[in-house]
Image (cartoon, rainbow over all chains, first blue to last red; front, side, top):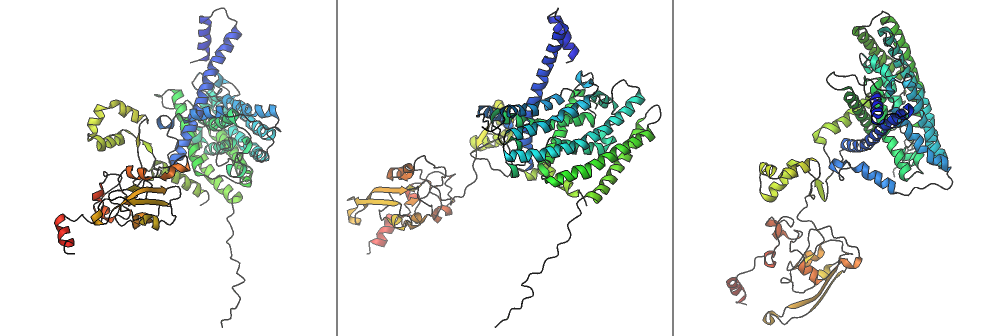
Length: 403
Length: 227
């Protein structure tokens, strides 16, 4: 299903329409399908995550409603819609009502530029990756809008922490994207391709070997920073249930809370889509399998890994999170850019590239990744607690006279 | 080593996910969803049909169970000595001595008797008019059952007896008579010796639950006639 095909179809069905109406109706047609598919995927992710977490913890999970409990998210949504929509009397009502939408829309917008097929219309947007970075930056604003307008101190605590965290993790994320764009630009220039290095189609085109093999350090930084960006475990500081109630959406109920919940479970899917395009080769794969199916399989695997990580690792403290971003990830991403640039300049200066050169770069990158992580961990990491010398009890030196 | 624990943790959760030895510890109650194999096993016990027979006879049920639509009743295995809530009473065994009422630490058993005029030569049997137990205050200590010299009162093995009103928890004499005569093995070693299971086996008559077999007429005559 291509954009031009649909335009032609509308033209043949209803001739003599102005071209802008044809364009708009085709866009609405496609976006209707994409948004519905994405929201249904979010609902299924809720089910998948609950079942898988339960299985990991030797529980059963939701299994009553429908085959294997598949209809549980539908029942959840019906319940959420049926609930009363409470707005606190001291809340700033306009911003309070706007916040869920501001949080949801960027996640949907990410799927607009994901190249689902080789001739994807919006994937060829020549600043695609900048679009994604700009759009996902909205979640900071939405979290703060929700917390500030609801006049709840726990919500505000969560949002203050969250904004600090989200802003600081934007930096390593953007820097890891820089190294991807750098590599893409090098390879596309040598190939003589006309695609932009910032477009996602160009990034997919440049991945002769997947970028997670070519630059493991960049992939690691991006995955870490992205899981902090969508505030999932181990970085779920914004809504740490054990400390803040529910964080920024403490005061929300009904359908607005459902939108927050949906966004929370949709974010891993969107992030997995970005990661699979940028680091796992996107629609490239085995030649037998259609490109869109291999992309969906990659997204699925990455979502599974996110769920696995959430089931395993505990939440970090506030100071640990900030230290991790500024003392560890930022130097690591600078090292990544520098080493990548130097290696590309050394190995890819000829007029044509062979895969052996790329494999050599990948090997050196793996060594650099291991060494730099080890050294940074030794320099900035947790020093290890000094051995506790037990303070002698005052009773130890007392003499008890036995009579 | 630094950061090694993270991957150890991931390995442990992966083991939990994959290894069949770390399956669910949840026991589902009162029913559970079953796949085709378990369903066939369930029917094997129920109707004496083999697995393949069942599979050919009910293809629709197999598909339904594959979709996870079929659930069977299930409960946790329960000990035969379980002290449950359905009290029962054999009227034929009871003499109206009211030992149960005397031994009850809460005093929630009420018995009223009158002279029946039956068996006058054996010293006249009592007729039990009122036999009320207030189950709302019962603590299931089983002392009434222990105290009964003729094994007339017994405990059941049920536990799903919640009611909406407190008055409904009072058990009267009709209720005691009409309850299932499936005594729990609590303080009934004679039943446990016969491997009686109140959940699996059938109901017992009044002459099957005694501590001793009833003596035959000749035995009775030889023993009691000399007195």
